[in-house]
Image 1 (tube, helix red, strand yellow):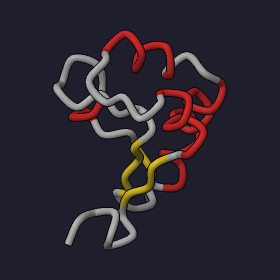
Image 2 (cartoon, one colour):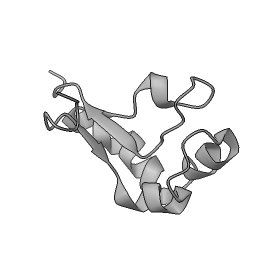
Image 3 (tube, helix red, strand yellow):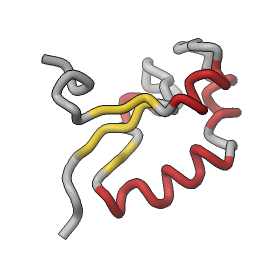
Image 4 (cartoon, one colour):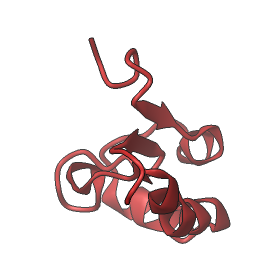
Length: 75
């Protein structure tokens, strides 16, 4: 019943393994947001309906820059 199980969320392998699976380290998350993988996904993903949710951004409690969710393709 999760977004992952429904096919509406993905964890990007390159970003996850760069973090060593660490969730709540804000400094590490900030570093990942500077990688070419994250920058590209953050720029191109929304064109196809994929976003790194605000709740998973720095300072929101769940720092997971590797987690992208599908919200639908913009019109």
